[in-house]
Image (cartoon, rainbow over all chains, first blue to last red; front, side):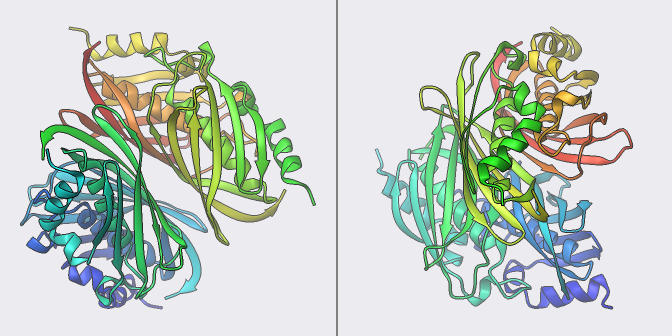
Length: 135
Length: 135
Length: 135
Length: 135
């Protein structure tokens, strides 16, 4: 039986997009994950601030890792994100994913994303479908 | 007075992340935008399919362009996306953003994302805040 | 095998809250439902307009009926609603639910709610879990 | 200048729908609210459990009270709710609304709804538009 860290490090190794965004795995347990990334000049939008897709992608990866850490494949089904504060070039984002609920077939996870000053920049929630396929 | 296309081409020129994902502007009007991108090997996740952040980012850019095409700055506030069908390496995604509502201070936009076979892969809705700052 | 209308009329008969809000079933097919209700003085909030729960409840019932009309129990998992236009006392609301996707275990449905003038007042999307229990 | 409690008691007095559902105000501060209601036989759906509109309406009222307690009119714009656990006839629901963010024109609020056993039954987030009209 693989540990949560083994499963998620395997996932992360194959996760080209999380690598492209420079995501680092800080903590991982069943239903819990902390991820970090730094906003580079490749990640800004037409306003010169971080594209909304950056915080979403970080949160979505945290959701994937936290929910898959149990050892069965989970897929996000419906997700939402409120963008609360502008994210600037050079900001260091930390996403913390916690489990609100895990039933037989669906789970609900919340991710808070903070910047390097500890200010919340986005608020994400995702529902996953829990399959029966093992990692 | 700038045209929708002039405004959005200026935005897109400065939008490093949309460039990184290879987004192409196919159509633009006030409240309407069609964007396209192809899923490359940089955009996959730990399951070997497109990261959820790809469809989200494409939809969020389409939202930004459609809502900003009126000539005033608009910022997405709350967004949600349902991932309906797996997106594979090599898939060509087309996001079509239409306006559901535009009031004085808030607007609501829906984005449908289809693959090259015309199958819907994701369903996005976003609420924007309409500022008073001109482009 | 029960027809969609038989299933949903059985559901509606037992659905005390939909009755309390005076919901009428106008159309029903697998994956499709049209419901109507009129805003009474019991349904207003502290601003003297319809409580947000009215449009949500109407949409959620439409989702339940459209998704259950296939003959197996479906439960809403994650739902969202954008309130676009104020709903007033006496307004007649019509909710039209269409199916965006129906897979093996999850389905995605969109509901548009219009008033008696054909103006859209709210925009709803819901993801359901499809169980294996028959009606 | 009215206190948060004065403002919200005025709102609640005029809020016919919150009364219909038997909502009681337990705590109120700027950006914070606790509301309670009991699931009666009028509030069940076609499955014999609480209609999804009950938890939504309770959460939406808590959002309205918490955000309006500052003394200016706030309107919910985009809201979402995950239904985590079935709510049964006789259950006593407590909704606790906390403020995630309050800017100049928009605010984000989270509401957790628990049953009488302290189990979370639903998870709600709402974005409000902050007007310039005083209570």
